Image (cartoon, rainbow, N blue to C red):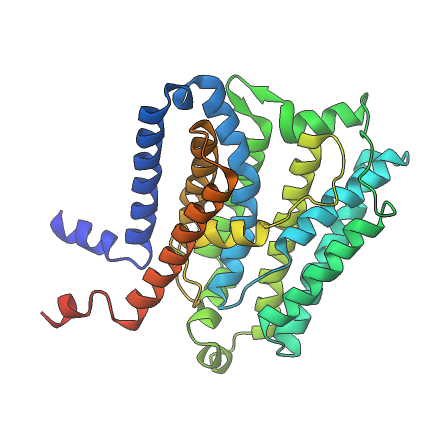
Length: 332
């Protein structure tokens, strides 16, 4: 039994995931003690729903980080997704057709990121910074630099809003179920498919992966397309929640995605991390936002606290991988 426990805990990324989930429990206990309203049913239901966009962008950013890259366009793709779909629906287009057009536009951004980084070897920071700016511009232009009006009600519009935000079975919202299904699909892809193994391989050592027959361009592009798809879904949820398109939707979500991935144990240096950790990372982020709001902590202080946590997690990961942490234990 001891050998099994040791082998499980020694699996790369498991300790980080466990730490993240322990952090979730600790935070919930702290905020429950600070304000009993935190653990009331309605707040917990709202908290679960608020985790969804963070989880989605965390999945996308996490997979890209595992390749050793980063995607700064996540937030802008989310905003573009919300604005394109809302604008088309407000102009009378069928909801399903609007979503399909929106999906194609978002996937093209992911494909572009893959080409820029994987084919032309553009530094991911620069390449995705460019697409981030372009997508934010598109979000502003699609409705002539105005937020859209209410998408309205009736028929498919009600179905859309119920599916992605308001509808629930018992105490569980449909949107939460949809996000967990998406997470399960990509967890399976990363854990049990050749594509997942290739994503980890190029993040660990891109040259060794190339020499072993991995198509680096295809794999990198796949990661960025997945990221764009997750942002597209987060955009739909954001639009369903607001009932309209906002040009500001998705602002700062680049940081939210990195935070969810890093807090969940995914390395920004590539090659390691488990997607299950993103659930904990997104939960930590949402719990901090919710708990600090209930505690009446000013927005500025909330940002400072969360920013410190993100930097600390990245710093810890770099120190651990460089041998500054844990080196003595191994020597002993």
